[in-house]
Length: 74
Image 1 (cartoon, rainbow, N blue to C red):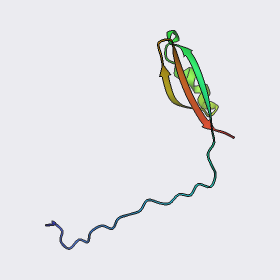
Image 2: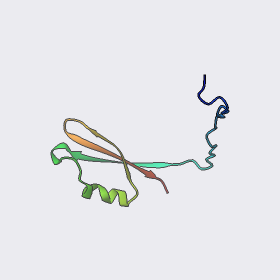
Image 3: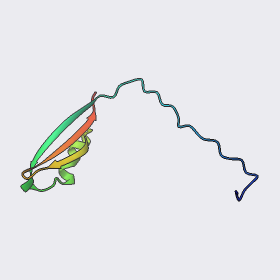
Image 4: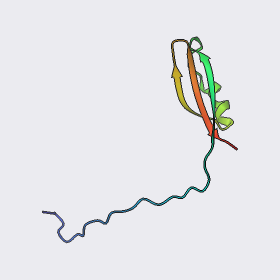
């Protein structure tokens, strides 16, 4: 039993349809740092951002950091 019997049931809504006509092509960059150097600072990462690179992942093993960046290819 509903608290609002005179209220109609909501109609389902559909998400908007988006058509992509161009295929996005990415380029990637891997930067390697020694673990003994510590994590990169904002001052070290900001130049990559100014060039359009986005940091998407960091992986480390017992010796090194691997920083992975991507940006749209021109």
